[in-house]
Length: 239
Image (cartoon, rainbow, N blue to C red; front, side, top):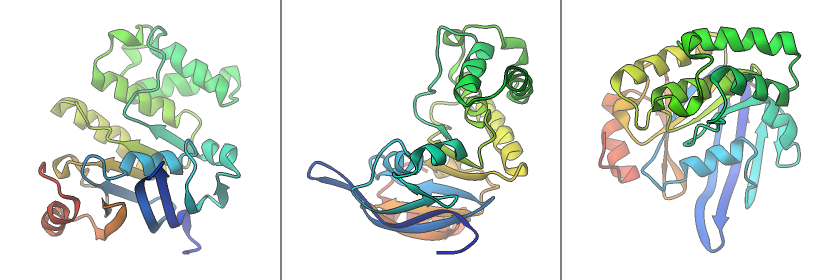
């Protein structure tokens, strides 16, 4: 594997009972790289992100994140990763500020540090005026932005985003793009999954396509080159 890689995956397989989801997946991602993960619904994107975040164990193969090996060193890996999943992973009966303070405690941040980071992230997310609102009153776009604030609270080196644009309107998508641009400028490695080429951020320079549990494409994310192959390899119908 490349010595500059922060994510290294070798012959990774995952099955649920007799159902194989990933079949010998190989790839690496360099530190600071932004990679799009494409694939039709059910292609294994969410499974792969759960494996990389240490929330699930592989059936076979090897994963190294920042030099740490999964699943043996899962705690060290989780400290380096921020995950934004289908569900926002927020406490809906708490305010936005209370959510960030709670997760800051879990990450071991001191009170003054988590308060300052919480204020900064809420401002970046455009949620400063909603800091004391109960999260269950938020729109989906607001929850997504708060989820990214939660995921970056402990300043992880890697962001793993599972279909973050799903269900968002155009304005919310633009807000999400801006937050991701800030993360990229900070030098974070980003792996973002989607099944919609039209939602792919232009700033990402590389794409992986999952099809049949394997990597069907690994190369430039230029939509002109990717669209036809994506439809053919991933069996997608939505661009």
